[in-house]
Length: 197
Image (cartoon, rainbow, N blue to C red; front, side, top):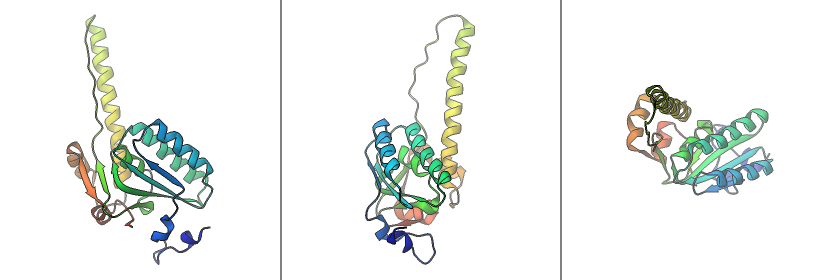
């Protein structure tokens, strides 16, 4: 166990700033398959009890963020003695917030002045109806099912993000359509993160 991990604050959960001096996994840029490959390589070589995952991103692919998050969840379950901690720097927008939602709120930290941005998933799709009416109905239903399931996945992520905080789902659903920006200290006050460093 590292000295930084052993030197936790008196509450037994809050890590001191020194614990973040050498994050094992450093990620910056768009959340995409390149980031995922980088993340998987770093995760594979991270064998410490305390694994700091540092991220700064303006967003990206929410499904890639979910894949990365599922990797964190899986490794946390198979190695319960290890602590996976999220450190958001500067901007943690969109897919970055989705990834952060896979960390327990006690394991989420932001740097001073960092901003979270939470928004609804976006869809850009054209639907052309051409052919027998029954096939047109099937095409419309397929797009409707895609939207419904995307909303369900999005709301699961929102629920994970706000679990244990003072934010309720109604607030997220009201604010997310117009891009909800949350400054680090506000995120701490709302209980979305453990601390600001």
